Amino acid sequence: MPDSTVDRRVLLVHAHPDDETIGTGATMARYAAEGAHVTLVTCTQGELGEILVPELAHLAPEHDDRLGEHRVGELTEAMKHLGVSDHRFLGGPGRYRDSGMVWGDEGRRAVAPEQVDPRSFWAADLRDASDHLVEIIREVRPQVLVTYDENGGYGHPDHIQAHRVAMYASLLAAVPTYRPELGAGWDIAKVYWTAMPRSAIQQGIDAMRERGEDGFGGVESADDLGFVVEDADVAAVVDGGAHIDAKVAAMRAHATQIDVDGPFFALADNVGQSIWAKEHYRLVRGVQGPVDPATGVETDLFAGVVP
Image 1 (cartoon, rainbow, N blue to C red):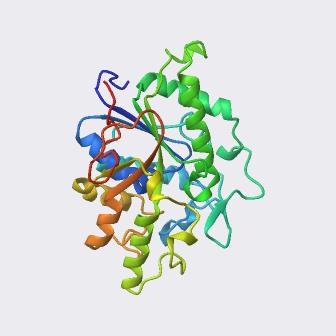
Image 2: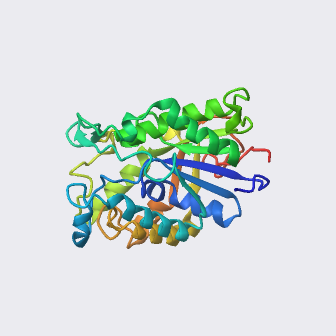
Image 3: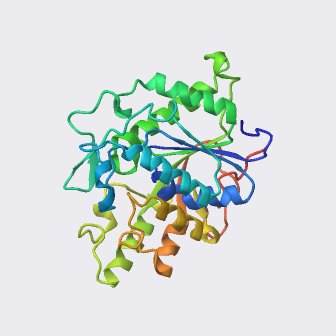
């Protein structure tokens, strides 16, 4: 059971194994190294993910259908690199299945398939799924919650559902008379949504084009992507530069999903590492704490939080 007496406790809700490392790995590594209690909740085992390792193609759903259990192992290894020991699957391992996705909007935004498995997370009852998270919130008692925005970042149905579950559960958990058998009520002080600001995306596009690479499907401007947010909407930037090696190692652990040496991640040089070391967030509940006077944003998700 987590030690709720630790001064700083953060809970992250992600959809599939690897999502946590790509979007928040440096943040997780930083807070774990600083002694904060970091709890990761993953909503599915990612059974329908892409398989980038040819010799593991037999794990695909149309063959052995064992990709999920393999990705559990990848996630376990990734968490070792990030220093995170408290990881759970929502409702237990395998409770919710990866819903899958298809590309819509000219391939720049994910959408739900026309048909999904009834076991999928997208088909889950919202309150039932939220109750699983309510119990975790009341156990861990985090001051900070991190999840996706209402669009799930780029539209993946499981990301959208993770957003819905996290937001609903955070409200239910704060009501003392709601299902008291799940624990004493707990009100989370600050809720953040992950964000990809326009300037950071454009920096990545420009850096890749300068090297003659095309890792964004021919997109030349961040304005052409459906998941960017305005820089002014970003309330916090966590600089995990001191922990980029841990993030890269964790990304490598997700070998079936991430080609760390490919052009999209470009982690072999200083440009790629500087981009992926900084993680951006929108504050959607709670009061913004002290900010960096030079940038006007928080540099710590716990800024202003009283233990």
